[in-house]
Image 1 (cartoon, one colour):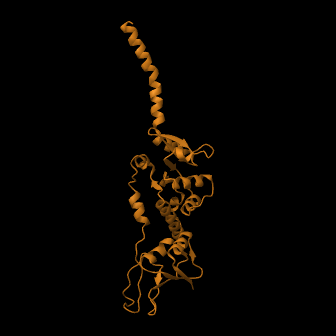
Image 2 (cartoon, one colour; image 1 turned 60 degrees about the vertical axis):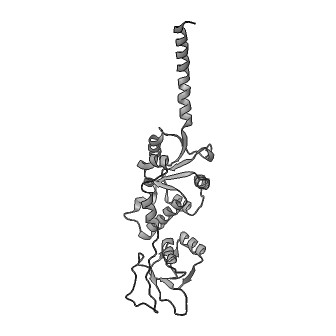
Image 3 (cartoon, one colour; image 1 turned 90 degrees about the horizontal axis):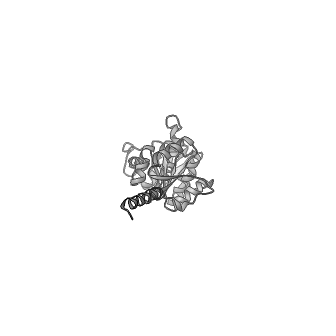
Length: 261
């Protein structure tokens, strides 16, 4: 066979194989599932990560959880946030997300798409704090809250440059007022981060302090946890006080005593 013909055959064979090689590289990309109810957010996320990942859109009929390691949620409404925090599954989407969390999938929620955050400037403080607790709760389940600009880097490294700050904001520091008749005067209070919480004097016949919350209607998990971390196991509440679901769960788990006055 002449050298020229041999070169032509080899060249043609190589050219025929190039599309196959390109397709194989595309197939090798890791699959990512995007859950979104906003077309604009969906498009922006697809454009952001499509060069590194195969982007699939959630479709309850054709999606198999085992095909994905990354799940991206572009927007999360108040109902969805509270349901996830309480471990509830109110629809197929929430059921899919919770199942993914149980199976160790990496779930990301875009901070820009969390609904309650949009009301930070004019929301009722107690209500906003409640949803902040829900946000902290889903973080404790392993869900990553990321800004859109950090999404791709976070998916590649598993790190979130803002995660530490968010987690610190969720921490409860043990500090309450103390008012013991046995050893302290009324002037020896330790300043509290929750001024609505008033601690009653410790009974000389009791081995523990009793805390009274008498000027706050909505009692959150954060309020109860602060007291518990300071050694308080019994709390007096006004009759009209409302305990959030997370506060009720914490009380039940820690077996705290709640009295209604």
